Image (cartoon, rainbow, N blue to C red; front, side, top):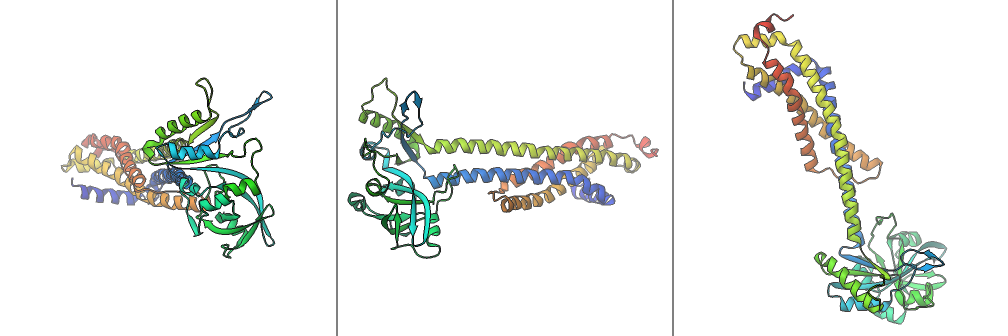
Length: 410
């Protein structure tokens, strides 16, 4: 029996009981759409993590001060200000793998423009900070090293601060006050969005490092040259491990730490953190797809059930076809094609439902989804395999009927 003739016979048989066919296909439709929707949700999560890696800056190493112990209590990293501006300069000059090293101080302050005010993060940085973080200027310019040297009162605004203080007005050249100190706005940053910790990276005002220490945030009394962290951009991703070792060795030497002493700083590679998150997202995607695939198995069981009923109902037809010359493999092919047609038709409808479901999730839940051609092809292929697997037994049973007994079946 030719394939196309088998498909026509299968479609004609399925049209005889439209409601039963639709209900049988429903299991496949739900299974395929669930697989596509769940995989797209997981892929969206992985895409979001990749976006966060780009927003934080690739090839980035962050050096933070160590912990402090006082009164028997051990405080967290950053509680002891052991890093200095000189450390950052030394890293930039003496670590071959480092492209730039940018020291940073930060704090929170109220910013005021006219009758509008906004509480935000104030970061004292050097011009290299934008290079380390791969952050661009949307309008205006970044202040230069001469502004850091002279502790000038200039500021670069994040998009959130610019929107809150100025709305649709142009902030360039305007003056804002930070802790009653006037600052002239020279630039507005490119939007970055949220970090992996849910922090709005655009809710920031950047000012020269020296200005922050002398006029806004204040310097550490015991060590005026201390900084909160150092952002280091590595020249190449392949050098990340080497850069970590070089930075650690250099800072241990500069801080005069003995071999039996712990580091008084921590070198962090943000890419490692995001890699762990991405691995978790991949595991989540696999679990979601596995859970959704259960629906396909349930749909396959429904197909087997209906095909067994169909074989019973059409026993006399099978006997008649065998009596006029049909062979067992022809009967097998007829019912197998019917099961696969039922499954594939449900798969096609399921793909459409899955795409619509993914778009609905993205719209209502504000969650990024990514329907990839690979997930669609996988779900469709799996639906076809379900038809073959669960349709084979009923088809084989039909092909093995005795023609005489089949013709006598009531």
